Structure formats: C-alpha cells, structure tokens
Image 1 (cartoon, rainbow, N blue to C red):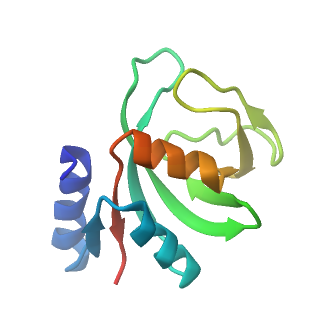
Image 2 (cartoon, one colour):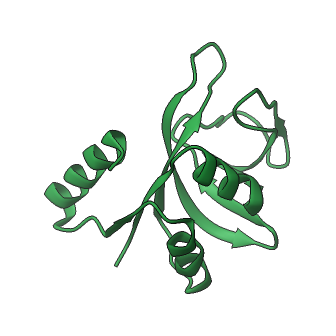
Image 3 (cartoon, rainbow, N blue to C red):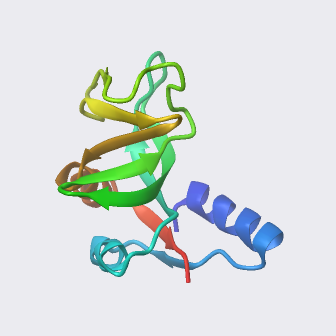
Length: 124
C-alpha cells in the first residue's frame, strides 16, 4: 500500500477507531461515489508550485455533474469560488469551489489515480 495512505490509515484508526477499506482499484472508488460515499481519501501523484512532484492526498467530497469536488489540504483559501488554479505537468487547471475545496473533471482524477498507482481509503 502507498506509504502516505498507510500513515493516514493508522491516524484514522487511532483517532476514530476505523479508517475504512483500502483499495488500489479505481472501480472501487467509482462504486463508492455512485453509492453516495463521501470523505474518500485518495493518494495521487501531485505537483505544487515550487515543489517537486510527490504523493499528495485529497479527500473526495461529492460529485457534481462530470466533476469531483475534493478537499485539498494545500488549497487556496483566499481565491474566490470559480477561480481557476493554474495547471502544471502533473495536475491540470482546477476550479476553486470554496475554502480548501477544488474540483476537476472525474476523468482527470481517474487518470491520475490509474496512471499514478493511486490508492484510496473508502469509509465504511
């Protein structure tokens, strides 16, 4: 399992008593979204401005049409809703959806997950 996700799994288990089910299959994430699950933790390849590409976690919040809204712990709190965040060689342009919330088309997150050996924690 992805070391970053394993660390999150241990923290969630220690603080909440459970961390959910770990998976490395996008089909499991897609099914959880279809079932209305929220707070799905994804570990993906990511590049932040001024940093080398690395593993990064986002937390899927909801599906809105063809987009997935997610919490980004390094999100931009000062930008207005609807603002566009610039893309880079790892992550394309994203839209600000609220404080710490961003969105991308679902196919983009799916491709990052599949091509980047993504991993997920799906709540029970």
